[in-house]
Length: 303
DNA sequence: TGCAGTGTTGCTTC
DNA sequence: CGAAGCAACACTGC
Image (tube, rainbow, N blue to C red; front, side, top):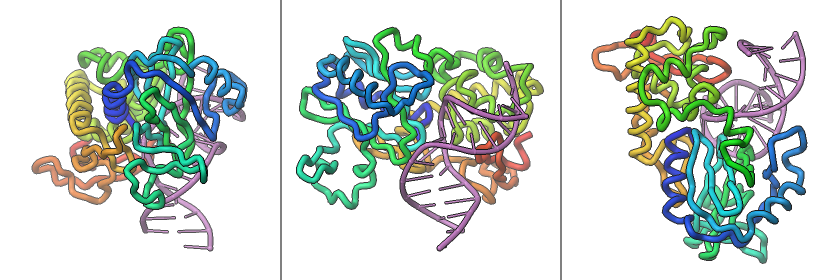
């Protein structure tokens, strides 16, 4: 479920193990990789061949992120990974059994009991003999690469400011999200990565609950005092979740296979029919669909 | 058994 | 340009 805090947690983990290591091989059974985003088939194996030509032998400098995009910086260029819905990057947790051509957990637990090994579709082999694997059940994840500045990549350059690192006060949030030509509800606008980047379905519901704003509100009607509340809720909630290693409501794991804790602190997401946890509120959490996404809110204090 | 629902995003159509 | 709907894929749960 990677949204900003989960991607942040993944990048923190990668930075403890990847820098100064060399990529010794690259493996895939599902060639995601693309040279540039274009009209061509992104699964064309010719891109993967090119990818290997450039990056086998590359030395990793460090890892950063912009919104939900992970960027592995090397001396040959940048590898850009988006985990989408079910992607997980894990380091040193799996080895490839060349005999029966299957991925096995390195802790010797039963491969049958492992929830991720069946879905490993991409791997960077490193000079410490460990493997960085991408497990991705639904195959929505994407791996891009570029030899130029990563900020020039088509997928990165259209992103709005990062919700945590690049949004510093309520005015910046308001200016990023408000678009007078658009009537999109506030929830949809908060999740529009080209306006403000990093917020997905869970955190948009949690932020709006905390700020007392109905997810269907037209952003143009939101007052400055409400933007202030939304800004501080956004910062506080993202920081809180990063502090607990992200949200493992579904199947998120960090690069060492460990769960986060934020799923235990949801106020609204997935709480349909429950009493609103806001003190003395007495509302009931509703579920509806906004912009095609499942949305949760309190029917009393979110206006 | 069958189908709605799932954290994300891009493309097509209007 | 913008909105809506669907597509990518595979599994879970009602």
